[in-house]
Image (tube, rainbow over all chains, first blue to last red; front, side, top):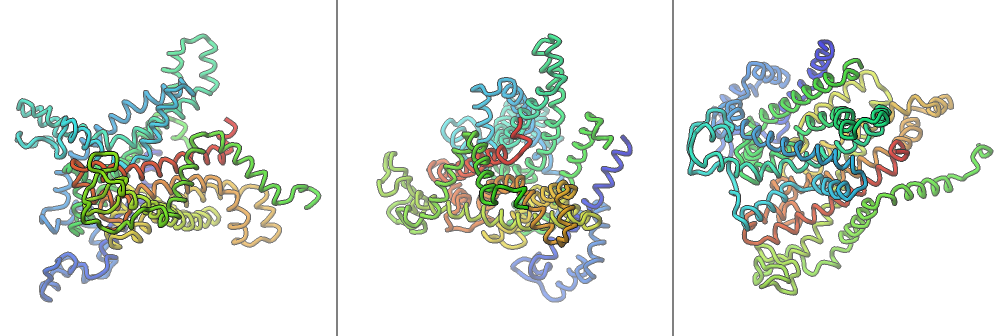
Amino acid sequence: MVRFLLSKLLYLVPTFLGITIVAFGFVRILPGDPVLLMAGERGVSPERHAELSAQLGFDKPVVMQYFDFLGRLLHGDFGNSLVTKKPVLTEFLALFPATVELGLCAILIATLIGVPVGVLAAIKRGSWFDQVSMTSALVGFSMPIFWWGLLLIILFSGVLGWTPVSGRISLMYYFPESTGFMLIDSLMSGQEGAFRSAVSHLILPSIVLATVPLAVIARQTRSAMLEVMGEDYVRTARAKGMPRRRVIGVHALRNAMIPVVTTIGLQIGVLMAGAILTETIFSWPGIGKWMIDSISRRDYPVVQSGLLLIAGLVMVVNLLVDLTYGLINPRIRAS
Amino acid sequence: MSDTAPLSTGAIRRQMLAEFWFYFRQNRGAVAGLFVFILLVLTAIFAPVLAPHDPTVQYRDAFLLPPVWQEGGRADFLLGTDAVGRDMLSRLIFGAQYSLFIGIVVVAIALVGGVIIGLVAGFFRGWVDAVIMRVMDVILAFPSLLLALVLVAVLGPGLTNAMIAIAIVYQPHFARLTRAAVMGEMRREYVTAARVAGAGNLRLMFRTILPNCLGPLIVQATLSFSSAVLDSAALGFLGMGAQPPAPEWGTMLAEAREFILRAWWVVTFPGLAILVSVLAINMMGDGLRDALDPKLKRS
């Protein structure tokens, strides 16, 4: 297992370096002078230009600049935002819980609905349930989630008036953020109605973000179950006279879960891309909206480091998925 | 050669097509998807004839008119008008051109780039393969929409740049698929035979091996087509794709956002158009996979 872990980690090093090169190169290939770009429309005096160039290291050769950049990264220095002047890492960490909260809720919804639906569809292959659920899954998979979000807002916020349109909690409530997770903070605040407000703000964005992963998980579970149910050991278990429920629950499901767990883990990339759209629609103050705002404000240090942090995060989660996969499936470890 | 091959190339091709159609037809969804897709193509081609109005003309007397069946609707604007008085139906019809065009361009760039890269990696192996695949890993490490967004931020917002960005993000999938298929085929005897017969590297790559790797590539191309329509609409929605007044469906949604609680039609129809097109292409893709994947055929 240690060898497996080490080989996986070693494999990540070139990818990580590649990601840093992309993030570094991104600001360099922008057309025009980076200092002028960062200075914005007001421009800078020649003296200030030289000073800023030296400060940001733009007067050095590109290779040296890259190693400086890498060195700063390894010391946890991700640069400062041009707009707020705050360190990018501080901003990232402040907004990160909001995205995690949304993402976790979404993946929870997707798993809790997707897996049972997939299993049932496989067991009742060809039935109306199978057909309806798999057609819905295909619709979910094809859904432009930015439109889906708007439709839900029209229905639940506009027509029915059940849920708020944007934000994480009603402005009526104010309490210090201790965990950054609104559900936990609102519960801990002890204010009446705060938790309910947090839930009502979270529900629509979670459903929107869960849509595509839910469809993928349901489809994957169904095909994994169908494959496993055709295996000899399942037939043997059935032939022995084992109750159907036990055959499905113990023999089939457990083995079918291996690819499904991987699928669930790999949804992190989908979730991050989805978070950009979902957070924009619902004005959810998380990483996705922060990235979009920074791109439109041309806040390049934020875009650069944000890109790096998100890609790094996806990479780490994918590594964890790989490791879990190795843990539950010894055959992978051996190869 | 002619002694062992009684069928002419044309006959073999016809037989293969017949077999393909046999398996494709078994998936009813796929046939429905194909039907909708053909409709979409016809709509795009005949858009200037079909559209009742110019998609960019603003009718000053008809701001935010509801569809014809709703109170206040007018017969000359069947699906209503948007906030500046443009006909929704005409814009939707012309939007089909954008979606198809985007899908074709993105898939063409990603497919050609990915296939060449994958062929080179799978054919030469060694350090060439290692370097190429690490670069592909790096591209795949970024969430696709985010990378496309940042690329567009670098290149400048606009349809062309959005298409280039999406194609760059998609081509690792084609490269990986081609590489895997090439590596599988390289061990086959017909490749060795061709090599012994004196075929050069280029001929081996493009004439001998590539045609035998086409199945999975076609399926991936279909899936990428639908993703390209979705992602370009998402970029348009975020203001980074096609720019107004282009009747691109995502851009139309972005313009309609502020009216969601007042005028449902300006939001509903463009999204529905995206959903229906993407769904049709995905259904077609499912059928193609069933028909082209020999492993699935037998099950």
